Image (tube, rainbow, N blue to C red):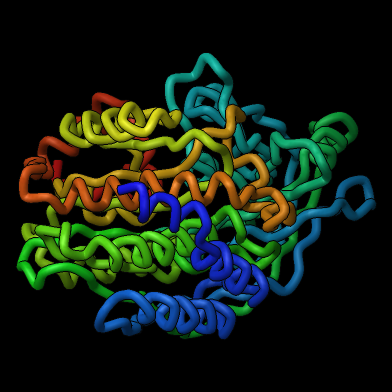
Length: 435
């Protein structure tokens, strides 16, 4: 064991791939940059794993052109949220605070321009995704949606709207910095403001990257990430580091291939940031009964403590906690449901899955989905330490001695109800279960 651990702590393979990804520039879903990143990832995985390849799929393309908030005759800095429709909307400006479901229930926002924050209060029992807040605004008849960052630093947040049935959203949507949001609320609350967005929509393609290691068993462990990133930053944290981690884990498992009892299938998805499109495409074309578990990296390396969302699979909780104990490394485990990121396209049908990120001690995305998602925020030490743990976890999940039962879709739906996730998924159009 000592040899591979030492080699991993000295390895530059994964970190070098991370630098390759961030240096490409724009990796927005469906762009040439995303394709270049996928090809580079295929080539990097091909150094260590067999059958490295790309699998293409169709995609609703979207490219930002312009966005503007006009308040009191003064333009305010903003950015269009991906998949916002082209349009202009004017209405009374309303600051709805956190934009909790009860905030929408208690306010009349019909025909108004609604602003909500990107976080939730500490006392609230769950995270509310941007898209849930957006569709509360749509359902309440708002004219436009303004998404205010809770992180200071003049950083307007991005993040997509729309859903699988209607990829382009219903009302214009923009992101504003914490500072611009505070100014809007202070000076123009109750006044008429105008929101305008323009974007090009087109037919596009994206691609998933695949490769395998270990025995050619029917059953497989999926080790996954997503290649795409938002167009406004390097996408180092979200999710260059996750894809670089897949490459580093592949390097380690190539050395330890004789220890694998089950095939390990690496998949680096395209188009995660616009609705988990690549993962949905793959899951729809895969025998889910043959997937032992999914180990999905999305948000690793941002902090030293690894965080595991385990979706109420007790065996996954135990495996993560044992890993941290055995290596004396900090881990946190969230047993509740986490219906975001690529693993969810498998887990929602009962496939045991982890969402692996890292605990930064802050709320929300932090630097993520802003101009500040850059390589300088990450530490190579954290990357290497986490690669050691995650490679070992992949080996343990692939061991014949590790078993974890699939859940039924009914069990997953009940868990979502129990964790107060169901209503939010229903309003966004992401609830896949029959009533």
